[in-house]
Length: 97
Image (cartoon, rainbow, N blue to C red):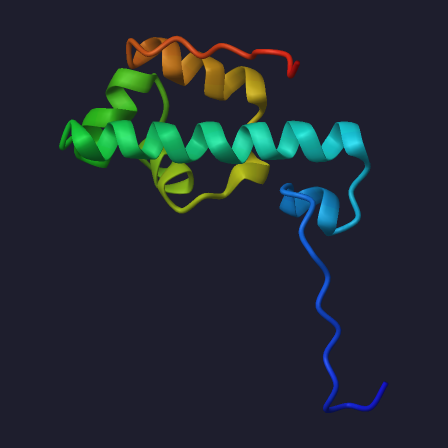
């Protein structure tokens, strides 16, 4: 293949799997990324400042900044589930059929 030719590969639907992470790890990473995005939307829709959100979530403002910037590697799935509960939006995981 020349430098000008590009190979296009269809996505599996999970960017982390496509990047080469194993199936189990890629699922956890995708769950974390999705939950973070939903939490950030909740904070934004409630028009909370980062300081107000930090107080509600029980973390520092810098942690809320990390959440808003999508730094998912800094948050465990457990912590994100706790954040959802503190926002009054309990998270659920459902097994695929």
